[in-house]
Length: 274
Image 1 (cartoon, rainbow, N blue to C red):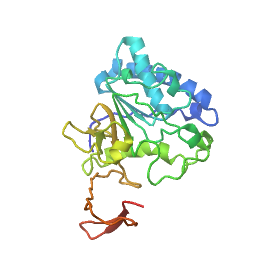
Image 2 (cartoon, one colour; image 1 turned 135 degrees about the vertical axis):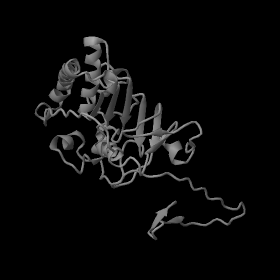
Image 3 (cartoon, one colour; image 1 turned 180 degrees about the vertical axis):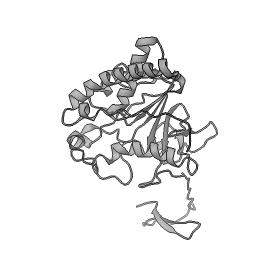
Image 4 (cartoon, rainbow, N blue to C red; image 1 turned 90 degrees about the horizontal axis):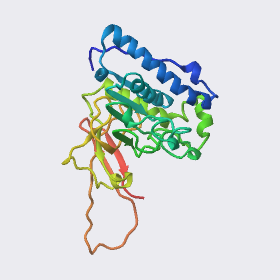
């Protein structure tokens, strides 16, 4: 993807470094306020419009992005055109309302990608409730394919920077960057559904009312689900397979195995039942 853009990267690793999570959570508001002041300095000297400002943040950085929007509204009554929250951090944020964490009122359009929104005791560190104009829950939003168990370590592993154990949390970043680097091959089509279980059983795979699109070209409103793969490129298409049995079939036990054959001859077996 080629666009004429200016990119500003905020490195506040010294203020967010482990193991001082509580201090880092508090610092996120200060960093967001400083970033808002920086934006207005640039706008006043160069002329960048608010509608063209897209703030992207991961984990605690997602809340920093939210505080950018909040501070901009306090200072001059404006807000960013868009904020993207990549698995916004849950501890010390989720249960305290939209004034404390990233929320849909912080920008004209707020899109959220949830990849590790499980309970903390199970290793989840991402917010599990919808907080944006559109919220995407790839693979249910709790655990991601190709990542190890989240049962070990929870927040302690985040502090230690264990990449294997933070795989589910960091997958949000990789999914978003994947949508930028290769936007033409796959669209991260997402489906509006009442629950992930309904999505898994194929009840919501119609785009008659319009589907969402996760990633850089995000579109949609509400809660959306989709499937992704275990490794790059993560984007995957979804297909529904319905198996019909005759009514008078004899009772038996076994497994159904589907063999998928690609155009180049590659084959993969998928177990449909156990």
